Image (tube, rainbow, N blue to C red):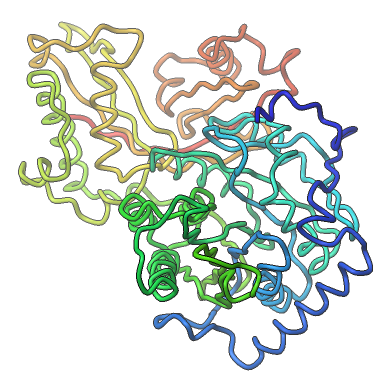
Length: 521
């Protein structure tokens, strides 16, 4: 079925009405409230006895402020009682209610890359409406990998199955609904997570809508044929271990190794890329469709209710930390990165080889904690001249989407071969090329261009779906004023000079960052 050819009969005037009420859950307000009251009462009673499910061996009790949840999204007869555990836990932890719910779920009916946004201002439920924070949605639409896809939202159940729980637990809280499609590159996972993270405030909660292992012929996933209930449980426990330990790399490797059928794998991965380092997940409840008595035969779907908490974040999501780059990178780190860039350039230009971790370590470059930390980075190549340096290529990552040493490798190769302004670097040029590395703090949004400090701030200009960027030293080098700098950013983004203050003003946003720059002697 091609869902993009369907007319939007169920959603009009900026409102998404319930599509699955009456089939996947009760459409009648009274009956639905009674059902949810029963789910919540049972969850409350069991959570008071023990806050965690003992079915998994290593399952820490929740400790600290609640940041996020993973909640199942099957029909309420299957997973509603499990889902209630997450919401009851969050309701008790957030006695004054959350500020907003950032709601992420997978797409079951449409394949796409990135994140689907909705322009609807209201998401309806049988219990009352939930308003969408359209200011956040509009801001997200200007970033890479985010785009408005109304029909994806219209057809999808993963978010809708959470809405009545949200309304019942928290009342008329605002939501930011996000359907997460395929993100094949781990860097894209981190990019999406970092972008969403910039909008999350301390009182907000992230809810990921996901079921876990889908086992059996119905789901085309039969990796074993004996001791099925125990082996399914072990598969779920293994997946939980990576979520518990906030291990994004391990979770990705687990998925690639097992081809696990966690339908919300991508939104779960995005969540891991957003969480503070000391966050931990606790299993509140584990059930499968077999346990409900509703599933017969050899098929099974697993339902986990998880709470993510952090001891250092008693009051919720912390403010995004901005590393002090002068302190983070000592002289040894800087020299290691410059040597890495030089050896990468030579390897790529002369042999066509891009070094991997093993090669880097074979070069005697120690990959300590600072070089393993995800940070944005630019690599700039200059051609030495008789009087001055001449730009030969510049490519970079604004966002901290890869470990720093990988970012330097990627952008050294990019500066030598992917800067559209220049031809590919040739072997006979290597002796005349100098390398400069810039390491960046994560971008932060600002309300006005008047907050920009030339010379201190790098600038990201967003106009509609285009963007351009200057490193902090660009404006001073050319002697530009702020207005001239912004004009040049507009031109670089493909818009006329002055667009930042003219007719395009409503579509303009700014971000700033800081950087530390070092170059070969």
